[in-house]
Length: 338
Image (cartoon, rainbow, N blue to C red):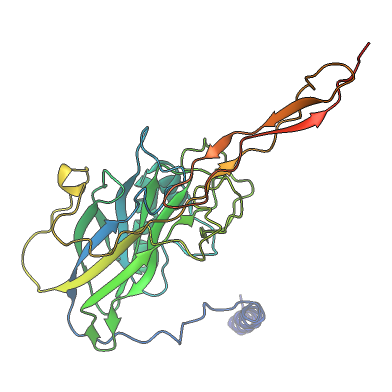
């Protein structure tokens, strides 16, 4: 083949390729780089201790409080240290399959695989952490973890047991403050709905949400259904159901042990570990609708009496409104008198 023609053909092909790339490039948008997040410039890594404290008491959350099969408790904690471009979960976003399985069943395998995959693909994950389950609504769990400048964020999730798909956790707490690490961070935790199960109560049977909803925070008025276990219309805000405390510790060469099974020591805090005052949430009495009026009892030609009844759905607690009358009567005239 003629060398000149080959050179021209190659030049024309290269020209066409460049034009094509430029044309395609106009429709491709690169991932935006966050500019409002301050850069961490801390020169050394930092170790933190994490203490999760459950505040799920019958006094604070008296409505449908789970006392057996199973009683109120917390799953193990699954967490991750990461950079600002990663999220284990986010409010008002869809839950991943891993979050779905964890919040519905307490199974962490898929969630951990998702975290590992994100670390391999975009190198935004530094480490995975865990803490043992709490056998009770008011126990504590502890663990330790490490962060450094590029991966200064912490996220974690803990399942509320029993529940349809409810959990507590934090999304992307930044432990870095400019060129140094924060000494202490304390966050009150409130319940979230993963948006994958439509149950209203702690012990609701499995009822898949189709189509899937986004993750939403549960409040005293949302979901606005009287059957919801967290529905307290007299409250502006729910009391915190848990709390997490993060404390910077001195570096050591100690190997951190992360037990995965619940133990007796996790059940109840000792000493002054829970310093908050006891919260008593008022729970008003709830009654059913009235039954139909009963038969009119009386002699023909004379006035009689008929009754209707209703029953208690929820007994009052913590100085909540007392139950109203459960039976009414009224005068009537017997029908079908001969």
